[in-house]
Structures are given as C-alpha cells and as structure tokens.
Length: 111
Length: 114
Image (tube, rainbow over all chains, first blue to last red; front, side, top):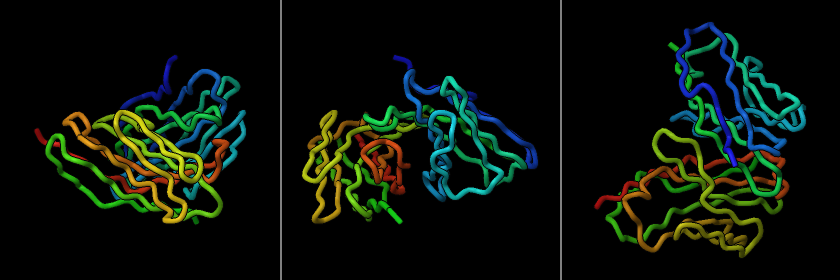
C-alpha cells in the first residue's frame, strides 16, 4: 500500500512569509502527527490530529498551526516565518496499533 | 516529563563489527519503545519496537530488549554492513494505543567502512 506522502519535498521561503505543508497518510490511518527536525533541537513534536480534531499539541508558538480534512489528509501552516523555522518537517500517520509510519519530509529553508 | 537519552555519536565501525547503541529512558508508567533509522535525505523508518518489559524487538539483524529494571533499550547488531550507515533514533511513546506523541533521543550517526 502507498506510504505517507508529503509535499512539497523542498521549499525556500523568505522571512515574514507563510508556508503550508501537506501530508497524505496511509489509507485507513486516521491519526496524523507532525514533527520538526533540526540539527540543534533534534526531533520535536508539533501536533497530532485524529478525525479532524487536534488531539495533542507540542510546545511551539501559535505561528504553527495545522488542520485535518475528512479524508485524513493534513496540512500544517507556519506564519511569519523566521530563520529558525528552517528544518525538516516530518509527518507520521498511525492506525493506533502498529506505531507510526513517517513520510520523507519537507525541507523548509527560510532566507 | 518523559525523555530518552542515547549515546552520542558519531560511531564509526568496520564492516562485520559488532554494534551497540545505548538508549535509556525516563517515563511514568510503561511506555512502548522504538528504534527508528534515518538514511540520508529521507524520513524515519521504523526499525523495531517493543511494547512491554522483556520484549525483544528484532528486524534486519538488529535487536533490542526492553529492560524495565534498567530503563534501557539498547540496539545491537552482530555484524554491520556498509548499508547500515545511517542515523539511529531511540524513541518512546507513553501509550500502546498510538495516541501519544513520540519522544525521541538526539540520534546516533553510524558510519560503517569497508
């Protein structure tokens, strides 16, 4: 079956802009989580959506937001981009039984 | 809060050498434990997992045993290959039901030379 698909793979944005990243989970998975990976902070949890509702939230500022659609696809948005937002953003989907399956990520560079 | 500590890298080994990457955790209750691997330019792949004490996860020659008494989940492989070069992450989830976030260690970079 198809894996977790994240688009786009690469993005370059300017400080102050906003960006939207997309994640399509494995078919049948209703949970989608987002993580930020940076060399300094490692992998940090952003938020998790389940059946269109945010179920868990990490410790990130309000500039980071997300949503989930009825088909379980999820988007995350970062507004007013800062240089420190440059990172690999990873999406993971889960059926709840077999753990998390990650996508290949979106590499965001803020200049 | 919950946390995972894994050995600092990088680790450089010759092909066919024995690998150990140490991982210890702090958590309330009985978390599920995972090892993920990340190859260059890619996302994370689940390598193995264990959901209760004394469980042994294994995959592709890698093994790790859930040791509650030492709060550890060390990754081992008897004979590494060049293709095992990657970054390895130890992680925990507070729940077995998949509805709690993963907490990751900092990662250990492994380089295997021929």
